[in-house]
Length: 309
Image 1 (cartoon, rainbow, N blue to C red):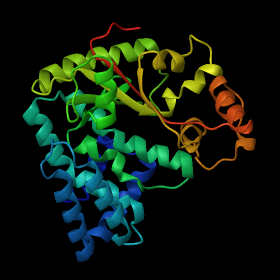
Image 2 (image 1 turned 90 degrees about the vertical axis):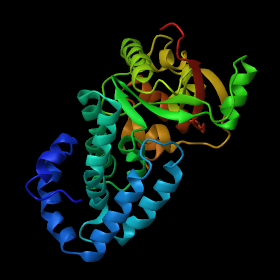
Image 3 (image 1 turned 60 degrees about the vertical axis):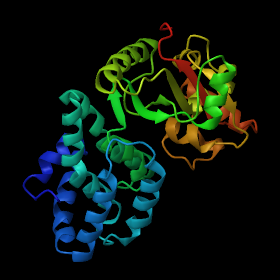
Image 4 (image 1 turned 180 degrees about the horizontal axis):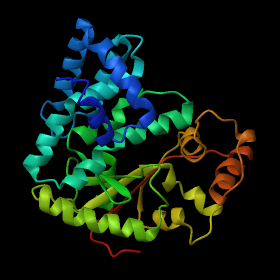
């Protein structure tokens, strides 16, 4: 199940794992391989990850499992343990992609998000490893795909989203298939043209490879949809143009100040007073917090067949 020491570097490169981590992962593989309990733990995590691969509804359970089992990994390996779990699950993921006919470049770009998450964690905390493996679960279960600038997760409408769509005149029920948009970091600006291209790719991709699901709407849950951003950013900014694609589902009342801070500045725990003001987005996030305001997650949707903006 665990790739051998000769195969592992190539596998890690395919997954875009940063070069600075590869030697350490190869070295620690020996530590993992000679620890019977750790290998048993690895096998249990991989089996749980790929069980019923492709099916919806397992994210919460698998998240709880992976986070709960991480402390059981050998201390020397630490949060690198998650990397071995995904590397060991890779053959099952690739087999599922092959069965569905997923193009090789889409598969490669999607699974390369493992390396991006390692790089994001080092940028934010200055530490190696992958302590938040839950974000990679849908990638390795065939539920999420990178298509151009955006990622699209095969999801289902929740009750509140279905209610919002029904109020807008759509025939929507909880459990109806939809596509949930994710905006990965380290992927270039969120320009309207890049988003249009991603949406065009997504319409064609899911119609061809998941025709039975009939995704009629796209949803997104992100700080980028907080309508307060329009008070600070010009109307032609990438973020405002992205917001204009969506119709609101609901408004949160619980502040989520660390969300924009970590995505814009790197670390979620930075004090508002210390945030730089180099760009319009940095000024918007920091000035709003320094004035005593809060940021919230926005929740939106739009018909997938609507004209591009």
